[in-house]
Structures are given as C-alpha cells and as structure tokens.
Image (tube, rainbow, N blue to C red; front, side):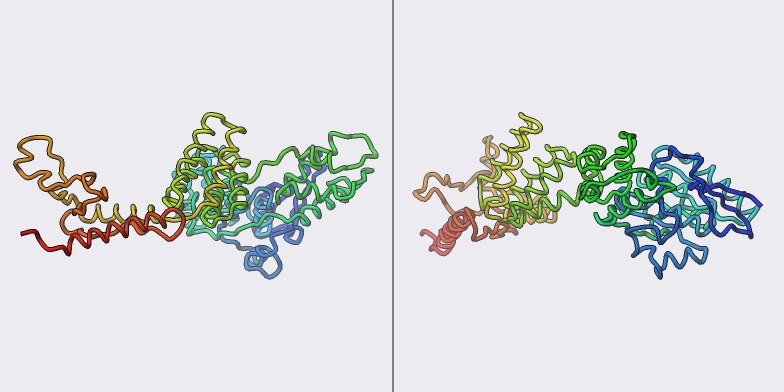
Length: 463
C-alpha cells in the first residue's frame, strides 16, 4: 500500500484499503496562516456555497460516491475555490497534484502525467490535478492537458477568478463542468471570524481577547466577500499586538486589512462588465449611476485615458447631433486629463460624464454611418456623377467632368438641388434625425431642402 500526503498535512492511503477521513496535524506547522489553519475539513463546514456542494446537490452526491468529473471553479478571491478542490480530492481518495499556472509549464504537466500513469498501473489510484489560476495557462499548456483529461487519466480541477469562456480553450472547457462560486456575504464572513476567535486548536479560543461592538462586521464589510482577506487581517491584528488581554477595535482591524483593492481586472470580464455598465448608464440618462461606474473603474486601476476615449466615442455614438456640444466637451475632458493626470484630471472626466448623461440622446449618426458603410462595401466602387467630379485639367473638362455643376452659394437659399449619389442609389436616406435636442432643428432643415428638391424635380423643363 502506498501513502500520499494531502495538502491538509494528513495521510491518504491508496489502493483498496482507504482511510475514511485523512487527519491533519497542524501542531507541526504552528506558523501556518490563520486562513489555512481554519480551512474547512468537511463540506458542511464550507460556508457560502450550499447551492454547489450542499446536501443533495449533484456534485456532493458524486463526491460521496467516490467519483467527480473534471471541474472549473470560477469565483472571486476568497470564495472557497481551493478549499472545495481539496475537499473533493479527499472525498474521492485520489492523489492530489497541485500546480500554479503562474509558475508551471508543459514540463510540469508531463511530470504529473507520467506519475499518474505509474500510480494507476500500480494501485488503480486516480490523480486529481488542481491548477490554481488556470486562466494564466496559455494555449499550449492547456492543449497538453487535453488528451489526459479526455482519457480520464487526470481529473482536472481548475480555479479561476476570470470568466472561463474567455480564458480556457473551448476543447478543454467542453470536457469540464463549470461551477460558479459566489462572494461571501458579510454575515458569513463575520461567522468565520467568530469561528476563528472561538477555535481553541487552530484559532484564538485560548487567548484573552475582547471584540468591540461592530468590529467584526466592519471588517467583513471592508473585505468585499473575500474570506481569506478577513482572516489574514484578523491574524495580523493579533500578531501585531501580542499583549493580553487585548481588544479588537474597528480601527485596529481595518488598519490590519489596509486598503483592499476593488475586484477589477483590466483585461478580464470585469473590465468589460464595468465599461458596459458605464456606457449603458450614460445611454439611459442615469447620471448618478454613470458617475458611480466611472468611480469604480478609476478606483480599480483602469487607465483613465481608456475611459476618456470611451467617453469621446459615446458622444458621437449615443448623443451625436442631438447635442453638437457633446463631442467638444468629451474631447476637452480627454485633453484636460492628458494635461493634468491623476487625480486632478479625473474631475474633467466626471464633468463630461454628467454632461453626456444629461444630454438629449440620438444614435442617428451611428446608425447612418453604419448603413452607409454597409452599402459602400456591398455596392463596390460606384462612380461619382460627372457633375460633381473634380476637373483640374483641360482633358477632364473635355471629358465632361464637372459639367453642369451649379455653385450652391450663387442661389438665394444657399442650396441648389442636384443629384450627388452614384447611379442606382439616387434618393437613398441613411440619416434619420430624431425629434430630440438639436436634431429636431436638423430635421427641419433636411425636410426643407427635400421640399425644394422635390419642387425642382416637378418643375417643367425650360424650352
């Protein structure tokens, strides 16, 4: 019989005679982080993910029967991805291999595969390969995993904070079940902190510690659903003040936490989620919501010039000529940020955000240009009418270039009806101004010119 050590410090026996529950001996690792010492030992201890692994769920039933599929665990930091992977591997009594996508490569995958083949031949024991931050594996690394996951040699459990549909290749993703873990609620993190303070073996149950009213809930709120951050802050506060008795205050715990960065990845799903929320709040004329999403992006570390470019784009796409000042305001904000930088220039972005959110909206320019581009591509290089062609040379004039052209400024109206479309597109209309903002005035002008054009078309030919 062979023995393997799990990541809890306990022993896994492989082969037919399995130990029912591996035991962890943390007395050998007293310096372990509190978050590791308090890691749940059973599914029932795991807080916050009952919909995935609670009693009666398919995953739990599968694990209790000793078989699990390959999985992708997708969730925010501190939601329990690593813990769930460990619990699952222990439940099926498989050998656990642990790789970090940051530090591992194809060579490490080959080593795991070779060991897994030997182990299954010797004892029939399965191998669970846990890959933390699997979204950081490149295509070649993921391709190296694919045949061994498909054959069942490896049971893959990948953990990621990024949308796996963006970061995991389709072939590998199709062979895995995806489970979405949610961020823990404040009351759940507060419960974990109380558990750590009461635990005499792995926490601070034997120490003389008082807790100020609302101190734990303040810490839980500041952690934004990240249980690991909460436990790390509690440990730092305790380690930094070894004198006993002591009182855990709100200020002490928040100081231990320091400033927690908002969940935001400038290249991942959250980047697109927030810019989408910002753009749609602007379009919906929800000024306060737009300002909030702007603040969220900037607080999360987004490039302010990227935001400024999106503001300029919005000015043309969703305001357009309903307010012709929208584009100059957006450009001025971008230039102001470029000149001032952070934090002074961010106020200009806020000003432009509020201006655009409260401006009359029209996507007529956007849709008109899109339709014009479609027709231009579909119809190909149609020739311009002879009357409006350029005629810089005598030869071109002799060929009829610019023949019959009438100069609009010579008329009282400043407008002389003429056909400017190529043959086959006469009378096409791309631009349809709306009855909002300044486009209402533009619509009046267009209708007036169309009236003059219709009158000219119906006038009798001069004899």
